[in-house]
Image (tube, rainbow, N blue to C red; front, side, top):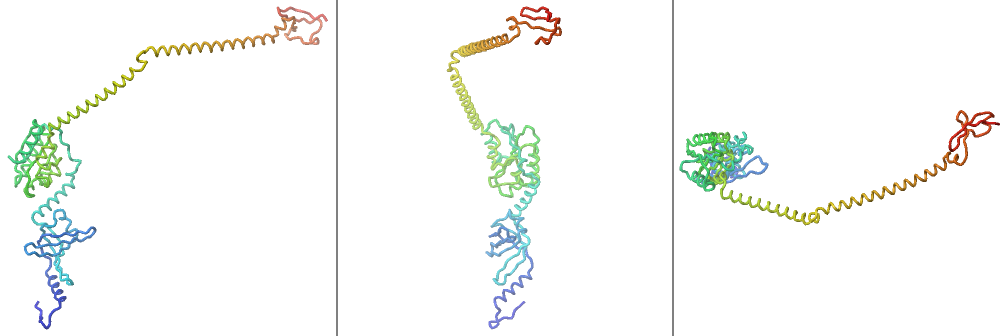
Length: 402
């Protein structure tokens, strides 16, 4: 709406700013395209601040959005990327500053392509297709190598020449396919399946030279990724150069930075292996020689002992010890017998001295009644009793007279 102003009745700057804010509020949400020149993501903050620039007019505007709006594309956009923003223009009257509050944000061109690839990557990773425990080890010396690559390409030449230079006897089963364009995915998938079905193929290399992100798109196709995931034969991905990283690199059992690197990782170097074998032989020889030297020194030390120079000396020493023990035993036994005989003689003499028979030998007699009792007193017998008198040489009958 038109305003009635004049040099005598001007509008204050603050009122002009408020009027501009009112006009911008009535504009509503719009789609805006621009280049990101600055991104500010404070840790823990729920809002992201960006600066969006129009390179053709050298105009910049601040953009604010919540993290849930920016996070889905955070991995594929950076400063310098072009984006399309659905935002509500806002006017900050105190400073006279225009800004945009975004509710939706999409990358443009290559950024959009990378965003789709990132979503596919997260989905396949959630299924476990990139898990490390699914990776299979490569054979040490493959008898036949399957190679999927472009016809007469530098990648094919690099793989074949480097592999045969390292191991001349290596054999290849080559499948030439389109490595970019609309038919690339179908041809690569078919070639991988054919090689996987051949029992003599021990490992499969999928190789391609460098290129743009669009050129390498076939090697991030979901169908190819799932085909490689289901292969029974180990697969090596050798796509592009070191910075290139299609999804095939993540699902393959081994990722090679270049086709040349793939040949080096799949085929051992015959010269290096011969050197390693020679090193192992030298190491084993040193070990055996050291063992023999140690045993020879031990044997020489054992032979130098006196017992080895005159083995019967040990028997003689033991015989002398045995003779000494026998003599000692005999002396000990003789002493014991002599002492026992002496003790027995003394005991016998005491027994003989105390024996009743010795008393009878001195002329004494023992009188016994008919019942066998010994007569100790005259009162124990009467006149006319018959008794038996026992003397040293025998016995006889007596009768009491009075």
